[in-house]
Length: 177
Image (cartoon, rainbow, N blue to C red; front, top):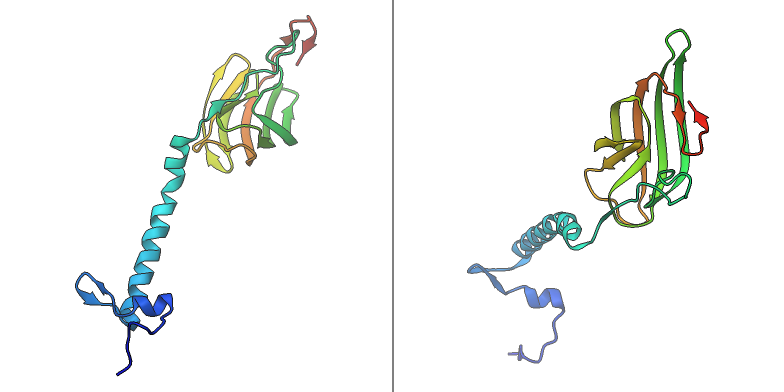
């Protein structure tokens, strides 16, 4: 009889022969128990982002960049890498319909962010292809994505809008629109 205490076993061999809920783990049962454990671990980690969001601090991007003449021009919390505009203008009615897609990278953990948009009715707004909530605050379009945006996350915002452009007089009395 060979002494089992002195026999070296691999980690998998050590698991074979152990009991789980009163059943001996051998061969197929060990494989099934391992698979169930892996599935449970994957299910648990898929829930981590929600708890990770709770432990990470997210902020609202600033409504402007602080220019003394145009304090609300530009927005903080992200850097834009590309603007894509598709416009349809009807001269007879002065109606402008457009879709803008903004490609950007968050420069901080964002719970929400702003775009500059005066006038126009918004028919659709998405962040990374998912509907997002939004409201207007003067010239600011305040956007809250379904999930917060982590620092360095590349994202896209698509806004479909339409209306008659209004004349805008800036603080320096210049006219736009």
